[in-house]
Image (cartoon, rainbow, N blue to C red; front, side, top):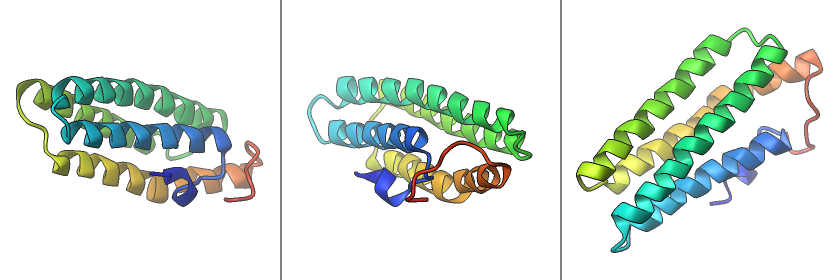
Length: 136
């Protein structure tokens, strides 16, 4: 899924990180369709969880630097996603993981970028923040 072309926030580094998150979710979906669902799915989920933590730290650092007023709420959104990934990790180890669970995470991420991340983008632009690409 070329998510960043549809969900670009206009910050190339952040857009690239968002693409990696979607790629990890795609890898989990692919693993669910194979006989290696548990091992491949678990590896993709571990990458998604680790990368999500890193990506969220980058976003939150930018928000602190530019004194973003909704930082705490944004951090809560990030924490919720990590909790959902941890719940999925437990389920992958103990039972079948349905595509519906991964769809939920994909939709959450898409909605988060479109509805929540774009708010900090507008704030950054008003504050003269980081350089944005022409797409945003």
